[in-house]
Length: 221
Image 1 (cartoon, rainbow, N blue to C red):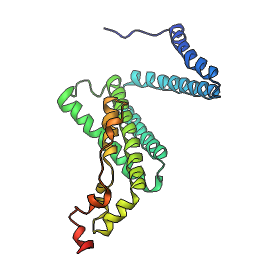
Image 2: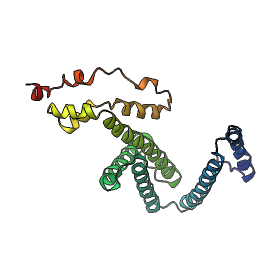
Image 3: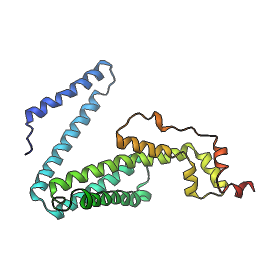
């Protein structure tokens, strides 16, 4: 079954749904109408350019070009994660890049050896969209994970310092912090479950929790 083309008229008619949020923003006088229209225009231009690029990439169907495009997407995703997570690029560029690369490699191996095989996998029509989906999910989960992790450390700074005073290492101190929210946020993202009421957990007083750690004897004798 071949793919059907979407005409410019149908695309325009589909875009008219944008009138609904525009009407709501105008009704409530939020002052966000201009910003939303600009964002929509930027998105349309970006998608148009990407569509033109992909049209030629699909026609060319070169393995070298496909991998160059993949590396470009990995680089762009790594920089986006760092920027939106508000961390220093000089310290985190290599770790984030390696994380995204490892994610892509593992998922590719699963698809190649378990799901689809190698026959059509490296065809540009399969390789490029699949790469985009994998990197897109990695981008979202990476931002949520990093921001939740450092937000948790900032929120539980006293608990973290207290665990270090008990003799715990930095890694063990991080584990003692409230980082379960990080995992729950990522699981909610994977399942597209926006109800985050279940991500909270009943925490005892942090002095009581950390006093049970194996390193408490170093501080309390």
